[in-house]
Length: 296
Image 1 (cartoon, rainbow, N blue to C red):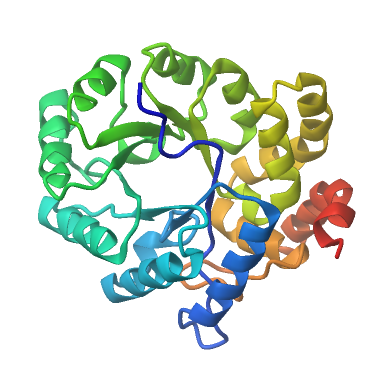
Image 2: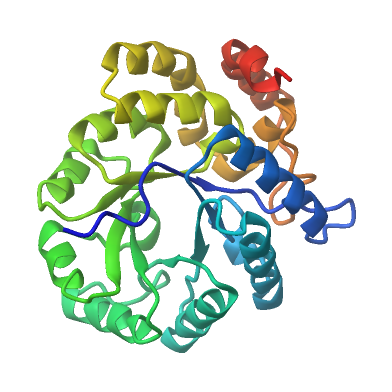
């Protein structure tokens, strides 16, 4: 059996912005270097955490191209290629392929789109014609389409369809996907150790922007089946990851990364700055991690 292409911790990296709200590619270079130094296995550019839907096509293209060049083969590169129109999703996938990305992550049609299995299969089949590995996306609470075990089996008949990222936050449903024997990537921050114990193939993790050292450590411990260490590490990470999942996810990741020294700059509109109470809650959750994350 061919080894899975995207194991370990794939960081859904923030997209940095300058004081004028423009994408800051120089800061992106700096963040990429720092996250690689910590030991992430892959990086997802133009991710949901990286505000994919609030980037223009040209901005997303520039982030992906710069990201591939900066990573320079030192980790796997995944590009978000989601779009409502099949032609647009295929175009974004072609951009990622031309840039040298290792794969793309693609949502099913996510606004008043079809929900039947055949239509979802046809959508991914058209994107697959570009010829780049695809990670599907299961986030039914946001999209209205649930990737079931039966649909996953059907999608994996496409050679390019490599895995599904499950961000449902429902461990029981995720385990049912894992039990197909097909590759499932966990995308729900609070489920990380439980998904690893259940046998997920990898992780795409936005919260790791805030505490990359602790996140790399817990993934490494799970890979080595050091479950006592996983438990101890997760006791420090859990308050933060649960807080992120309670709401204002993207804003909280941007603010939290600022607090631990991985600042992506000011978040772009339509997002607003977090309330003082939310910032204080973030500070409290980050507290046990701060010394490790800011150590030189």
